[in-house]
Length: 118
Image 1 (spheres, one colour):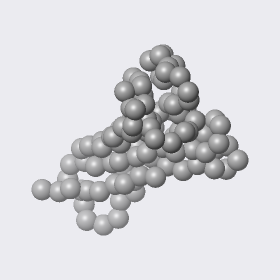
Image 2 (cartoon, one colour; image 1 turned 180 degrees about the vertical axis):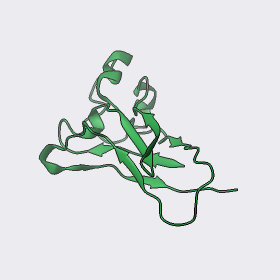
Image 3 (cartoon, one colour; image 1 turned 30 degrees about the vertical axis):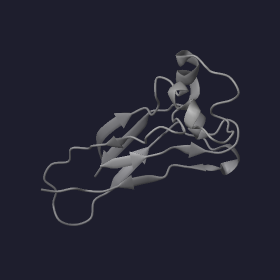
């Protein structure tokens, strides 16, 4: 199970730019995704503080899809990565966002990862 929430800082931070994410387990790509919703407008009423996402006026779906990869007030997706049988020992997990840039070296990609086995 993988939970990520992309956050940048300043104008042009990573939270404002949709980019492809590649997930690898032990060097093998197991998931590719691009965060974002069709629109953040349904969540505008829940936005209680000013921020660079919502602005003062409603935006079209096209506008939202051009820049926003997360919606304040919305849930954060949980992605299931089928892994199959794994050997005992250490394993490597990598999230690669090759086009990511961090304005003024600010921004981060917090994530939670846990393994659920039968």
